[in-house]
Image (cartoon, rainbow, N blue to C red; front, side, top):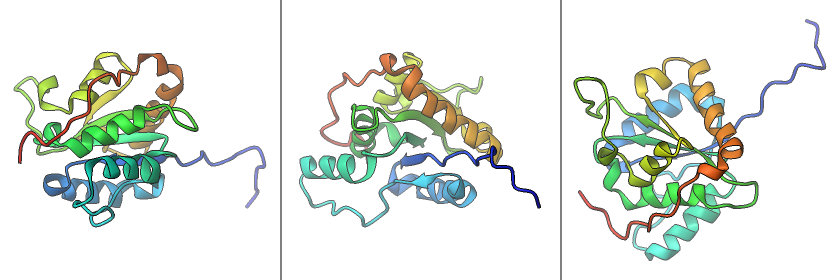
Length: 185
C-alpha cells in the first residue's frame, strides 16, 4: 500500500458531553458506543465528582478538570435537561474564554424528547444558556435521528461547532446568571 505524505487524518476534537445523568445515561452510553472513537471524550462520568462537595468547588472542578481543553461542548437534551444546574454550569464553563479559546456548542435532542406535531422544540424546554446561543446563531440544535444518522454526519455537526468557536465567537451569549439549584427532579 502506498502512503501519501500529504494526506493526514483529521485531528480528533476534544468533546465534553453534558447531559442529565439520571434520565439520559442510556443515550450518553449509546452515543459513546456509536461515535466514541471519533473524538476524545472529556466528559464527567458517574462517580468522578463527589456530589457532597460545595457547589463552587464542583464548578471549579468541572471547568479546570474537564472543560478547560475541550474544543466542543455537546449537550444531550432530554425532557428534563433544561432544569439541571450542572448542565448549565458545564455550558457556561465551555463559553468562558480560556487557554485555547472558547468551546464550540451544540445540542442533540435525544429520542425521548417530545417535539411538537410539526417536529419543533420550544426554547423553554431546553437549557436556557443553550437556547440563548441558538438564538444568536453561535450554537446549533439537532435531532438524534439527524445528527446521529452516520459517522460522517456526527463528524460534520461536531466540526461545525468547532468552527463556530472561531468564526462566531462574537455571538456567544454567556450573560445569564448561573443556576443555583435544579428546578425539577
